[in-house]
Image (cartoon, rainbow, N blue to C red; front, side, top):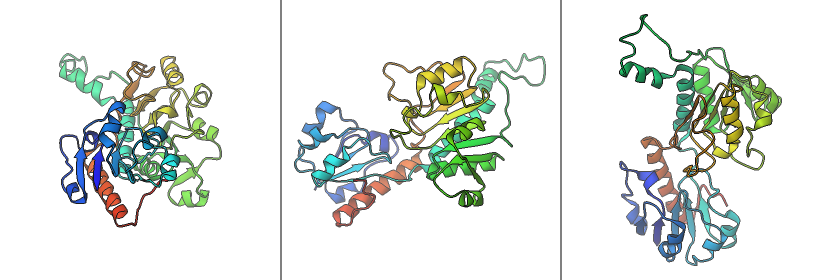
Length: 319
């Protein structure tokens, strides 16, 4: 069994490895693979593992031996699933491996915006506290979250984890969900009647929904008008959930207080992004998923997925 890993570095980085995978077949690992390198590297592959290397119908047609694609992520938009199905290629993903890591990053962005730990630390390191007129000083307001409303779009595993974190801070949780209101109430979550209500009552709006035709640019010039000027927007889902120009305009004109994102519509942002440099906007480079613990789980699940396929009992199949 020829196994080719096209972009293994983001999963292992410098602290993990592919030990033990050799027992499953002839293993070849590439840190990164550019599109023009793919056919040459994967021509004889029966198994491909990919994170962000896109496999469309044309490319799949040039890989006649391919039987299995393991996506090293939860999202599976990097593979043409229908083209793979027609060719009898099984495609699997890695569900729920980074739930708490992503929720933790969402909370980190929120706390950074409400408490501005970094800029105050920098000011102290630069000597400003030594020369302060009082025993304390503030470069930005300190905001208490107790009693405020955390509105959540997408109440899957990560959305529910974020809800629990918000509850631990004493926040009221409001969410859009297909689940019955009575069931949500048992979890201390109020079900919003409409998206407009969800936005209008939000002190914090946190996005944890999949990207689809319905959610593309969910946050746009029109829906931003529903938010309070004091609201904080958090996005650790997908970059294209935001119309970045509309969000940047709202931040720069004071129509939105703050924004924390771990994702952008184009990654890396080779040509920049309207959010880079926007007022009170904080951006991390798509690292919420990448704690060592989450990456360890990802590798373990990926290996078990492949073992199950080799046994003829595939799991986590998405096509």
